[in-house]
Length: 68
Image (tube, rainbow, N blue to C red; front, top):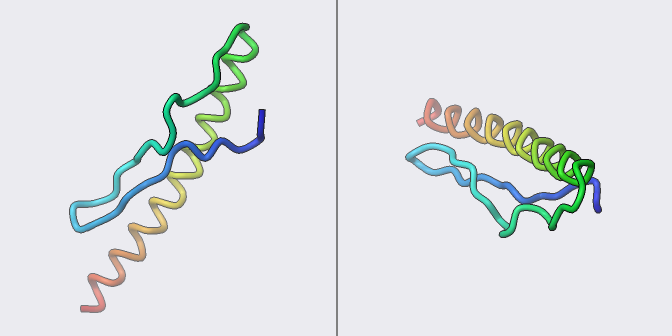
């Protein structure tokens, strides 16, 4: 299992930013509680990273709107 899943991403346009899923299924098959916990942890970390990028993109978009 890798340290980074990169399953989630985001799109941004005039209607705002939205989370998108880049991969189906979201994680590999789990056979133990430990595998479930590890996969969910990586998914949460990936979503947190997307949130940081989305917020930065929204700031850029807002500053472009103010510059007009």
